[in-house]
Image 1 (cartoon, rainbow, N blue to C red):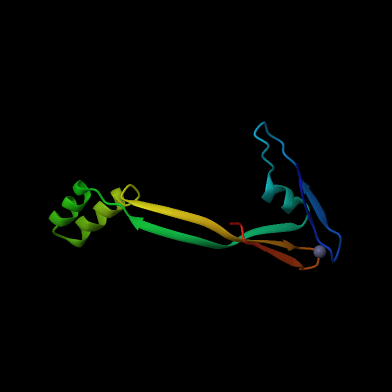
Image 2 (image 1 turned 60 degrees about the vertical axis):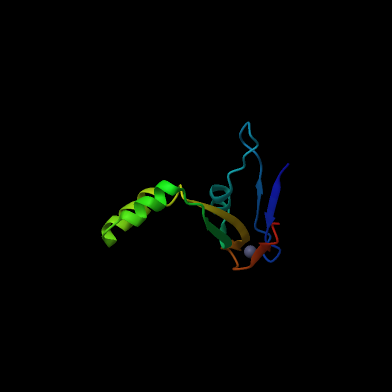
Length: 106
Ligand SMILES: [Zn+2]
């Protein structure tokens, strides 16, 4: 499989073809070499607290803002579930300025 990014205004184009065993195609590098750019323009991020008793107990015993900050910095990644979904991806043509925004990934 391959993906072709083609500017209809100036015919600038690049083919993204897989180069590795896992069929990975290098996007940013190939686009830059052909005067095209890609940006992630919008994410949907949801974080839910999923705290265990030890963590809540440590927070309850904290006496200062510094102690609270330290506990949160150490443990917040383990005490939350975060879902991040790409919502928009934009391709720009550096030759002529045309662009496309891809959306509705789900
Ligand atoms: Zn163009």
